[in-house]
View 1: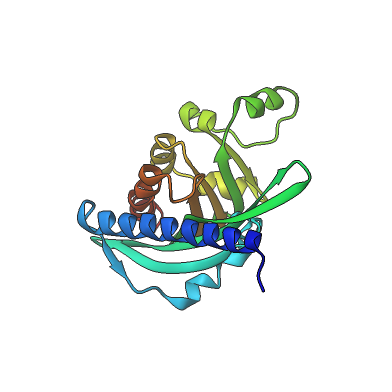
View 2: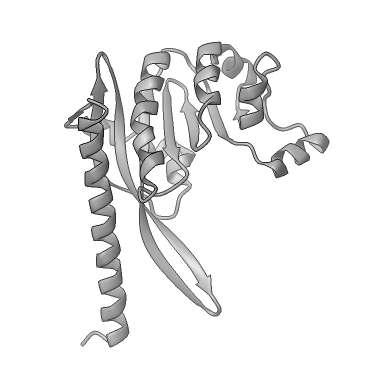
Length: 213
């Protein structure tokens, strides 16, 4: 017979799941209505691309809970709701919860190699004084001050980056992006409970499709 503690924990998990499902339904509804985007059935093969990306496979027990194709005008991207475990250590015990995050996937015309773009912090800026690790673009100071860029092929990455793409990304400060040759995976840093940033992901996906596709 389950213990009382198990019953309480199970109830808490179910409540959290319902909260995430409600936030997700609201995001999809707002994207369809306010942003005038079509939400369509996904291509099953797109899910198979995710494990190649560190932004996905580097998380704790990631799993795709749902997926769609989001379209506006002639542009589209794949959207995934990804469940990720988060473990907190409280004194001598550990508590694991599952949170939901939105990921977008766009196919690109140019080959960016294997490259990662993350938000640059003050610690990163200080570290760069001593060890130059990321790729900077002297022609676009705002973009370079906002993102740290790493690539397995600096020449391929810098040639693929366009002023239009840097202009677009320079105005966004809450996403991470990973390129794998001709695909770009992007996500917000917050779970879907952060409603506004995750709603913005829909417009970001269409914008990236327009620039990269």
